[in-house]
Image (tube, rainbow, N blue to C red; front, side, top):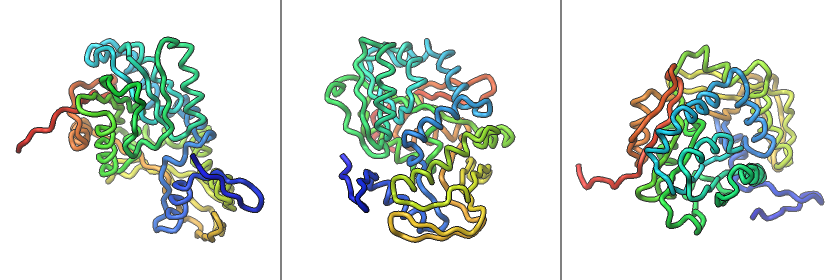
Length: 325
């Protein structure tokens, strides 16, 4: 639980890790703040709005895959597993998976506690007999799972190609962390976004309605709300670019003029044109994705893709490591 801090007579519940990441990210060059801090309540709501946009293909493509391959996924996974969803958000895709596999329990894990509890409660109506155990946690580190699922075989669920938000090194570390959290013999169903034409990719992260821009700029508003920031949000613009060498979309907040501001009592200044790097979304070819999973301790055992080969669902297993070579 966060310890309240009193500042000028007001109680602050700022996450100390949020404070540390923001201050370090604004002080470094180039400036960068981890994307996980997008997801306060407002950020989570904006992201859910993004998933409904016509330009944003990943969600509808993955949902169609879950519908199309549900029976095959159920046959490969079997019944009676506890589903552990990492970064559950609104759990919008989850019912499709749960109906396919008849799980023993569902454990949604998310960093946004308020949004997590609301989403978990919404599932109760559809699955009144399913044991649901929400866990508020940062799944970038090993997460102790509820005792109620300790003896059940487990299926990790990591949809949305969220793994693409991490550098390949960090993604490998996360996959190993998931393996540690889930244990030997666990399975992982993961969404992977494929490399495709830039004309498709960039609009998905810079929509005409400006919802993604609002999502990006909300990070600055959160800093102002929670860290006594004085950032002139109107002086920044959302930028989304395709970095072909790194095979990723990058999101930035670009200063439109010289600005000076404070955060948590520290002063910062940025020149016009300077950016804060807020998110990466790496895209993977088929072999790249399998290599990534194997590096993280997971053996791919099945894969499903859409007709355009834009997105993949990969089922992998935490198998025993061979002694050699």
